[in-house]
Figure (cartoon, rainbow, N blue to C red):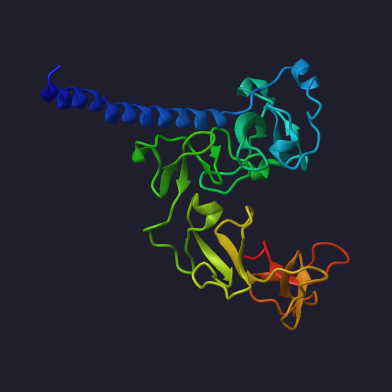
Length: 297
């Protein structure tokens, strides 16, 4: 071999290396994507025999790690229990009348499973529960609950949603979610964008301190409350956290209610609570405090 041919040979050997590395990166990315996709698949619906062999099946849990594979730790809003389970349906045919098979999140929000969800009465654009305990909290038939009830849509086609809605992906497929951004709200309302982590935005009347616009001072957290039976209304408050022992509430007249420092009050017409709030308590033995009033008109 002549020496002047050596650089040519080396160049021929080295040229494929970047290409090989690029292919490696692409394949690695593809493998990562596939692994991520696999981890997001819903837990299968096991047979009766498979369930019997799993000692943690329907046992109480705090996280997925407490459950044998492939079970997930699931909080059931209907029964108020948290336990290890598989999917209890694969299609709507596995569910009783007035129920539909829906994809739900495990307790830690990471895993997916399928369960029969009660079809409800809530209309398009209204807030909803994905696994409601009563029909008043669930979406009408054919609507998808993704924080708000919405019809199915196509992400690539904005026209597949009605005016005032935008198509967003969800665990049960894309659905139309309400949006008021860039739109004028009725007098006395404003566009609230912080609902459900920003899934949707709705024109609402704000009661209390609007801490989404005016941030709370140090040591306080912006607390927002909505009620499905009071659409178009939201209660916002700057609250400090507390406990029955320590830390105690620092401001005069405040009481520790539901681990939050709230204005104490005496029940009655002159309770001293600001508009939109009522003098309430969680249960007997708890202090009376000014809390959001869902019955306000």
